[in-house]
Length: 290
Image (cartoon, rainbow, N blue to C red; front, side, top):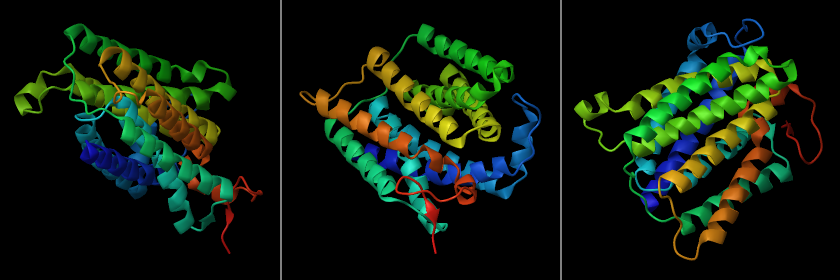
């Protein structure tokens, strides 16, 4: 079980570094209108920073899949929220100084993950019905439609809506990875969860890149964290049999809440260039290092 937690943390490290590269690429790429422009993904792909981020995402996804085979979704997804702590720490090496509150949030993420690690019961991939698998296909299609329709929403709601849809889509990727029973090539070709993971992952990247262009980085990243943690955690508990160790429900709930709350406090580190351009504030914000 502990090797699964190490895999989840390795995924968080990869995703945290990838988010820095991708957000910088997204913000330096010209947008295309008020809504979601599918051509945006092709424009950002031409940048080496975005491609480096994609490579890190693929590495992260590989170890995330390994973690999902032995750990409950609520543990793995909370660990992935620690990618924001990784991004915040990376800020220090890029010339951004963290205040005491930011370092406290990084520490809180670590404490929360420690509680989850102690509370988690080892889990294998649960068998689910074909109806659940096709329900995941429908959910993916609905999320794509909502994301592509974000341009119709009021301007102030576009970034949080796109961030939330991106987070829910990443949650679908996690659920899809959890329910894959066999990784034999012939079985993967006929497994609907493989295709929901691919479509949801691609649309999530598009929607989050669009969110980074359309509004507040902090709000978009915070909604992303909520969508990719709470949704799959609830599905894991309600439908996939995820459980804590006997007598560890309260520590698990406290660890999950602490990790997510601390990650939300670090949400603005989902994009570093905007922090570099903003004026320094007092304890709760980063200031340029001398």
